[in-house]
Image 1 (cartoon, protein in one colour):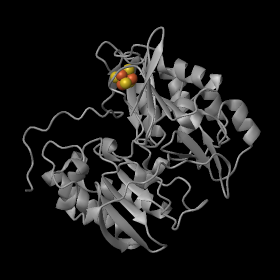
Image 2 (cartoon, rainbow, N blue to C red):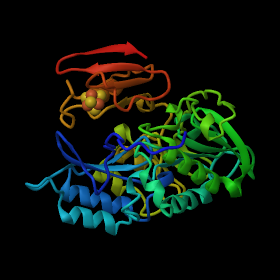
Image 3 (cartoon, rainbow, N blue to C red):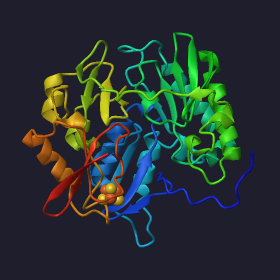
Image 4 (cartoon, rainbow, N blue to C red):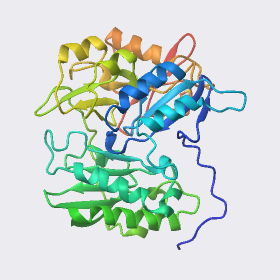
Length: 362
Ligand code: SF4
């Protein structure tokens, strides 16, 4: 069963060292395992985007960061000044593993709720991942998850996840299957060992769930139950402030409203601030700090002008939809049938076109 395919399809997930060339310029994606960028990195990235790109920092559904609208030279290269600024911000700790450091982790762990504090596992997993040369061959789409028992990250279709059962043990989830329960001290070694086995057996597959046995090949024991959609809370919480970033677009004004250190990026395109914050100032800068807003129910793909396939401006339609107060259901607004970035939970697709829009349920 375990073999390496000689003909792996190209992995087009972008990184700093391999930009994606979009209709609005080049795009680089920067990994922040667990949504934890290094101290001061967000502010430095925002400054670099204002100098070399569209000016914003874009948050992804994996808690990563993107800069887009980057000017390129006649050879398609981004400015050396941008690369230097990103490296100086600590956002490229491993050139060989930059595109595989995809780790989502419960953003509120240790701050509000959950049955365990999984924060120490984030850095330990990232360090172990980068120390294993063979794991540079993981697909860029491969996703690790660390869930503190509240079921937020476990619902994100991770390839390999550890979900806290209590303060000292975690259940390993392998693709779509529940695996063994191990001591928390064994979680990192277990996940790394499973990832190495997947690299050897994956052939042309991107995800563990695509294996014929959906994960039984790696020790999956029984189907993991489907979890209800997680609703990220916003506002002042137990030991943190939580704020949503509409459409994941962190403008210069929003970036400057954040503290220098300790900002946690959530997989729901928001931020958690463990040191607290002035809610009024965040709201004035453009953050959403209340569960009453329609923004948690409305997302959009890139659309035009950033995507050459788009038939309309998805983000403008999203803003109009929220402003109109008509977003009662979960909506994902797209510019074509590819439906990039559609949530895993039930939703209605809204197709933006140059003059109109229409819906379909998924
Ligand atoms: S759904 Fe279509 S228009 Fe939107 S980003 Fe994907 S390819 Fe582009």
